[in-house]
Length: 102
Image 1 (cartoon, rainbow, N blue to C red):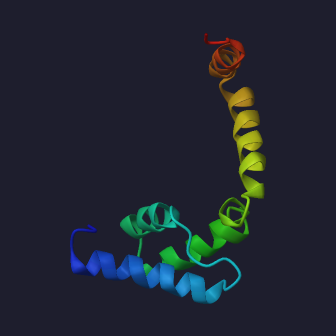
Image 2 (cartoon, helix red, strand yellow):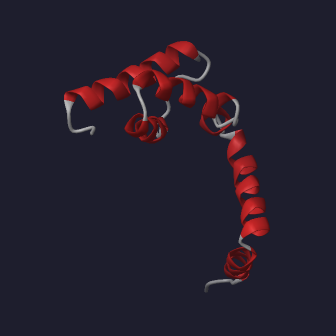
């Protein structure tokens, strides 16, 4: 999809519009993966508003601001979800994070 001019233009439009919409954040490397995934599944306008919702309602913009304060919070949320829904996998992760590699 993004090998064509149309796909690249849509991606550029979405990200450019977003940085004009949210002037305090601006573009940060990695946003294109989220925006591109949304564009793959829906129109440019819907993808834009979904992107805004993801950044604002789910507080993902905290991952992209200076010093990334939301990154640890989102890691903790993912940790709790894995612990609640996939406890065997969570135990596996805990075991391997406690093993010291020499």
